[in-house]
Image (cartoon, rainbow, N blue to C red; front, side):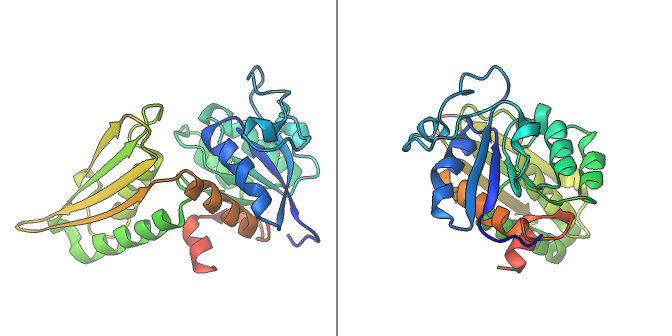
Length: 255
């Protein structure tokens, strides 16, 4: 999907924590340009200048609620909206042949089939966490599970701010899945614990608990811009890929 000039970007879920972070950082990426900012119908942000919404200078682009129309002429969509809106956003991106980075968590059981179908038409990156450090952590967890085997139990712990809706977090579940995919570790021996409070950006720990020893792998995010920066870097990479389903590991391997 080669294009001349910057990739036109649509931010779905613009008023959210990630949406506003993306709006603030996007001007730092010369290969990308803001095409549209979208919020759910009825959201008080609709009609506002999205630059002002993000706490920076006005940019003349007002938040809109019609995602379908906003995608016309775009090359990339970054979706950090809600699980309820995900299926319609995926379908709209597929219809308009717009590359999609889907970072929304808490997706329903119907989504895997929808995502597989969309990936036949567009480049699609689905991730619970856009931090490059977390992507490395997943690889380390997978390698540790393979090496340690069934003699170890696994506990995944996540800590987030008080407004975090899903528990365990999508990242915690992804780390558990990485441990289970390591080979000899039974999925039923993976437990989860979550802490919600204050303004914690995101901490994740994976504990491998054996007889007489314990291995702990962890990642801490102290600034939400880590996720926005990773999303913009990954989105820029994704926009040039052929249709297919990708993960953060693919981004890492081609950096």
